[in-house]
Image 1 (cartoon, rainbow, N blue to C red):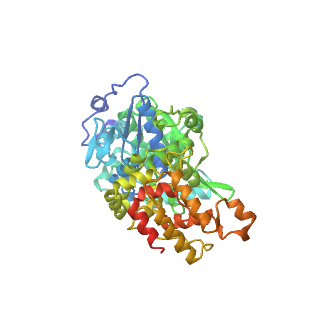
Image 2: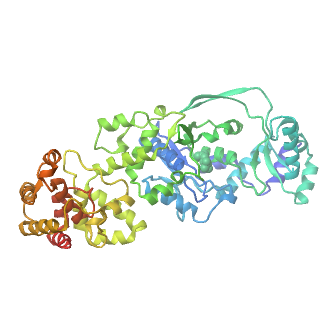
Image 3: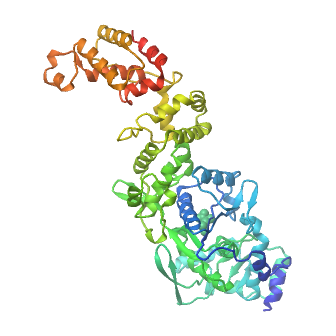
Length: 545
Ligand code: GLU
């Protein structure tokens, strides 16, 4: 077989060479040790937590080393493509503060190593496909779906490894140039296959997360180009990551079984291997056992879930960093108040298994993160979220900006700051009582206080209320009034001798708390009153008269 002739026959339009490609995409001018990483999501419309998990690793590895982090859209499977999906990816990553140096942007590309959408790189892949044909490592295969099914059925019946390799590739491999020419003339669809070697030879690749991976060399005649001329993931990955000069391939462990194909191709082209980093699949607990997160069963697999719930960006990072690096929590305790970006992230501290997504843990992390954030930052993040997901509340936050800022500061200055806010969605609900527009009395007034006593208490409270009182003076007045109306100032006195009192200060302060916030469980009454302002305080209490 004249391979050069076959290559010309299959790729008549390809005039560029591998050297031309090397010249177009030269080695990057980066300092020694700088890493080049990427994420390569498919535009399916569904961005999952694993995408962010891998993105954080890739972003850290690149930016910590002064390297480059880019976004490549892996759209070779057009059956799965959804309109607007590229924007969904960019927007989801943007929400979580993942910034790319180059790659696909909403309306095109940014950077010198593009195009960054694989379908636009067709002519590039064809240069390499042609080369593999020329050197006898690739050939066209005209087998129909029925023929492939037959082979598979036979292999399954004989309990053989399925796929196209060795004897099963023979018929296609041995077509003559004339037969191929005739098939092409008849317009028969074909795919380009790699010519694998059936062998026991093994190779080892050092995975930066999992350590040495020993495998049998690829034996399969796997597909390089599909019948529409678009490459498979295997072909596209190898060519793109070589030309885009990726130094580290951070991707899910589901790609481990394909590693022999990729190593085979890198070797066929004579290129150095990048460093592979296969990450663990995200899991969750179900009862006492772990299972993979499922798209169907677990809303928390979708990144959109975290956006819709308004999980704070920093919380998601902190949470994922605790999953990613075993020493993160310890580092955080030793370095409170600094950015998570100061953490020295390392691939060697990653584990090849057990990335357990626990939403309760995420909520705990989130509460701490929000509680440690200054009020103006909380305000900004909350408003950003509300602008997209809760516009009426965004309106209130904007109209009552000063009040909202004060509200977000409540409890922040105490020794143990309150952790009332879990996420932005819950925050809207929690903060509702600060605005008359959304205020509601949700809890029942304390039944220990009968109606007459309640009216007297509230009337007397309002009479003596001075908005300028400091917390101590204010509380002395509350205590005096409590005692005067026959309630115990010390809850334990009431407990000891309930017959001597109508109730205790717990009940009188609860009355005030519910009247002012609608809830028995709310922040400090004096602080809340000073956020609401005297007018609102008086009007809410007057409703109880
Ligand atoms: N498109 C692949 C995926 O979504 C990317 C794998 C890679 O990063 O190489 O799984």
